[in-house]
Every structure is written in structure tokens, then in C-alpha cells.
Image 1 (cartoon, one colour):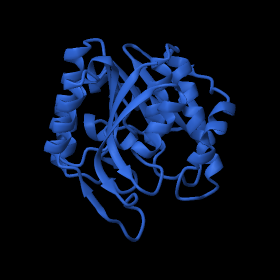
Image 2 (cartoon, rainbow, N blue to C red):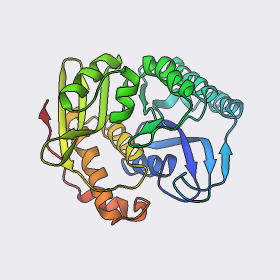
Image 3 (cartoon, one colour):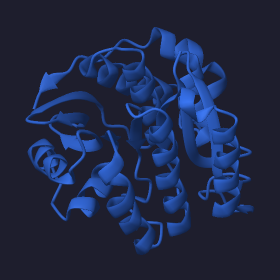
Image 4 (cartoon, rainbow, N blue to C red):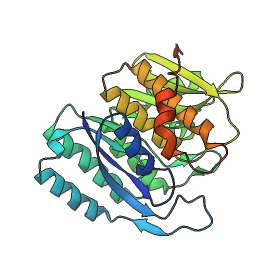
Length: 274
């Protein structure tokens, strides 16, 4: 199975960043090179938190060693998530370029993790701008949520029609946009590629644990690398996320210990043109 280089946050407790990306990709049969950009006790939603960013130069040295060992030559895709500074964005760009020098067809999924509703942007604006300007031009796939898509494009994203226009303006071949308002108290996950766009729908829930965006990105990329169609990969990823949220029963974290059974039994959601 393909090998994936994943750069994102690591928490000792919880289900965000690499804590959910790695098990999801491994469940789909992929090897993962997991490189933490920050190492934290937990995600910042709790009263107490400890930890710090991994220095960008340390990550670059790790990548140099992996490249020298020949492991990047066998890497089929790069996934980037939480990048805390412009220096980390630069390292992520260098990682994509390293992998593509060794394997030019390698995919790059950029999950632009910098903001959400209702709190807005939670990284420095310069870091978010660097993700937009330095990483998205390299991306094969981008997975912004509704807030991030609007911020990146400067366009409104109030419904699927607006999301489709914004996705077209993003300049990335494939855009997977999440948390789009839809009718009948539903949320849509939309996939736009070229002139075409499809979506699948789930019931809007009053709350959801952190980490759902990380899980969706990993599930979509993992299914896509397993040679499933874009429609299947979208429906399978959205279904896995919805089933995991439903099983969280109002808890603050996704139930990863039992996730394999949830994912195996989740019905792939149908997709429809937008």
C-alpha cells in the first residue's frame, strides 16, 4: 500500500491531528510517516494545556534524514494539517518539493487548518496567508471548512452555490469543502473538480468533537489512494466522520479505540451533483 508523509499536530491526550490521521490511514492499509509540528498535552479547548511547537529546523533535519534513507522516494502522498508558524509552512513546502523530486506524481493534500466558526481565525494572519500563498499552489487536493474557504478566497460561502464558486476560485485541482449549510437542517460536504461538483449530506448536530476535519482529510486521501472514485471516496469519508461523531455521545473526543468497527460498518453516503 502507498506510504504517506503526514505533518500535523500531536497530542498526548485526545483525537486531533496525527492522533486521528495516523489510525485512519493505517486502517485503510497505508504506511504513515508521522511528523509532529507541535507536541501538546491536549487540544486547546481544555482549561489547561502544556507543550510547544517542534522547531522548524528540527523538522527539516528529520526530513533530510528520511530523504537520505530513501524513504521519501517511496512516498505516494503528503498530507499537511496544523502548521503553527510561517516557518512551519516553509518546511511543509520543502517537504512536498522533496517528495516530488523523488516521486513527481505524488499527491499533496493541504488541510488549511487555521480557523473555524464561531471563533474565526486562530493562527496569526501571516501564517494563514502563507498557507494560501505557499502551499495551495502546490496542492492536488485542499480540504477547507466553510470559514477557511471564505477567508482564503475572499468570497461568501453561505450555501452550496457560493461554495462551488469559491472552490473554483481557490486554484486547486480538487477541493473538498466541509460544513456547508444545506436545506432541511443538514450540512453538506462538497467535492469540486474542474467544472463538476458533487455533495453528500449529513444531519446537522448540535456539537461535535474536535478532529473531524483531520479525520475527513485522512479518510478521503486514504480511499483515493486505494483507487476508489472521487464520489466513493467522498461518501466513504463523510460517512466515517458522521458515524464517529454519532458514537462520541457528546464527549469532547472522538472514540478512536472503537473506530475500526464504526468505520467498517458505516454505510457509504450517496453523492449528488451540485
